[in-house]
Image (cartoon, rainbow over all chains, first blue to last red; front, side, top):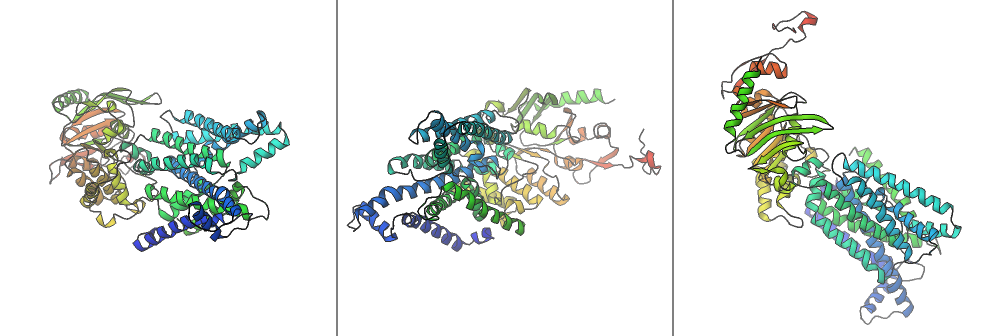
Length: 344
Length: 290
């Protein structure tokens, strides 16, 4: 249906324009939601004042908007875009609709690292925690890659099964460490695992931005090879694509994005699985177009999920991961049901 | 009973095809899970020829083709393309010279016909290299050549079997190969499309090696036939040399008579039926089990 509409240039142009306008307005709009009463116009004035314009805004509002709200909204956008992007790429190279960065043990590896830092080393929620999470997820990916980098046999199957096994292995160790540690340590690990953008600041924003942006450029550079893999592994090989190497390379890049984001924002599940499916249903499968749309959609989705996290309960913030999982899975089930009833 | 003539035929064939061959396979062996699938395979293909690979189910036709397009790595022996070992070049370099039309492609995730044909550019492009206007003209030309221009924007999955095979041939045209390999390109096609697909391949002007199930089609289209049986190359030569009543009886286990096709003069096979005659007693064709 949408594929059909998409053939009309009018529809294409208006759909893309709408998406870009929403993408530009959303961060501004999203920054006006939160505990402190701030209007959309305030955000505008604060940005203008920050950029050296002569706009009139109180110092405190200026500070809240520029130092707290905007980096948070941007981090949410980058996180959503990055997670959706890595999900889309992994689903393409494994040709498995279930593939998602978390399926390869990245989040359980990250939790393992975080728990080791908090519960075993006894360090609080300092810079050591994201470092630990990053090391943990890197470890799990290294194990998955070691299991699946040798050619021959069914590489995808080995990759997925190794990911699941490694997930359970790390979960077991994490549970054991939590079981034997202090309740306060358990609470802070739990809070971290559920994901949040509260730690966002301008000083730390550059790293996730750099990694997600650079990976996007690399993915787009390999769009031709990724497209070839879509038509089947053997067919891609006859076109001169080294499928096994491409798969490992893409897994490493996606993992790098995810591990960085998990270290910054905690475990935010389901975005990487859901957004690529949504985009594919709307736009078809052409890799180039898809990756860009996936980035935008994932980013916007996360910005608004974070708004919900701030506004849903009065005087309290919900963990982002809870909302993405709850809303996302519900939404996803509805789409699947609709798709089944249409017989697609 | 045929062994002596067969061996001498094989030797004379490989001797005169050696001189300036495009593809040369020497003593190829391939094993899967310690089981020998292909053994002692040697043949050569001259540039510009149309070669048919025939043999019963499980003879190793697909395995042999997969060796030639670098998916199966031979356990022994050499495969040379223009005098160069194909395993000494990169997958991309080989893909610039060998294009493959596979039996069936599944799960295209809704790519359109034109996207699929455009994939033929893949080996000629490095990462970050975009398609030029000339590339896209080549793609549209190839689609036109196989007569699918009207369907260029259709999802590939929704095409009929014959249209899919033609689209894959268009992809191979875009790939600009020296050698086109086809694995049972006529499988599951109506007779009209079987002929259409093979005629299309024959008129491309490239050297073609195709496995073909239907022996009469193979006889009609091929300059040279390779007959595989149980992983060994048992016959090679012109259709006249390979398709004999005795060979068909030995390798395929069927009874047939062979005469000349009135149009092209190649062998025409007429099969005889009634193999279960002994059980039912209504044997009408005069063939008996023992």
